[in-house]
Length: 152
Image (cartoon, rainbow, N blue to C red; front, side):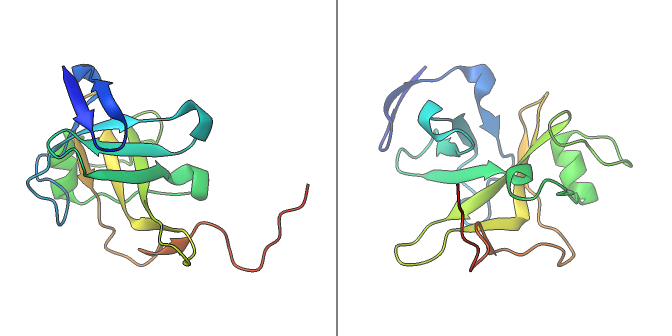
């Protein structure tokens, strides 16, 4: 299949790489099929391109890139949707992928949504946006803590 993206041009879509959100995403419930894309010059960033809307694309990155100790929290409903067994915590990188959706606005610091990551079952390619019931992480976590200089 080929898809014309507003941002990436014509894309060859390998169906085995697509992910499915059975309930869609909050605010985008009608958009269910996405293709994760990565630019070799931008390692670590993952674009979630809708295959139903050429102009809908989310910028994300693996949660463990931002917080190496990150722990996901799934509701029983999320587990059922993903097809994961009850009990135990799925391992990020082995059982599931977990992506923080990024928010970029001109003149504003870059932010990541760690409170409700996109969780993808790696075997079935089914995904949910898993909203944590606690406040361990925030919806708007800064990518770079303010006031920290980077020196080489």
